[in-house]
Length: 85
Image 1 (spheres, helix red, strand yellow):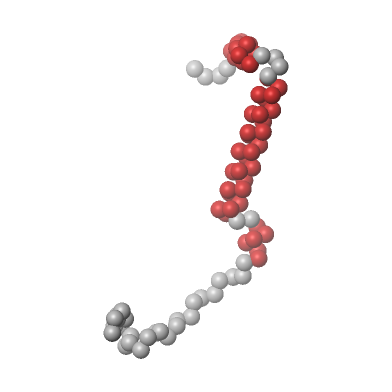
Image 2 (cartoon, one colour):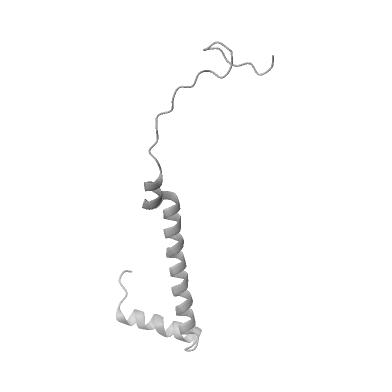
């Protein structure tokens, strides 16, 4: 197994021609091409959604360090907040 030679490629093409017929081959080729284009487009869209495009990354302001907020309740620091009183 390995590389396909000229005779193997010709044999595959003859079998495909016999299976689909001469009239259907252009339709099959066009549908395969559309499928490949759609697959590439979906990969690109997914990659941009995950990684983010350069334009969206430039518009995001730089993150700042979170300031330490004072405790929200009157409970002394270090003790857990009670849910029921």
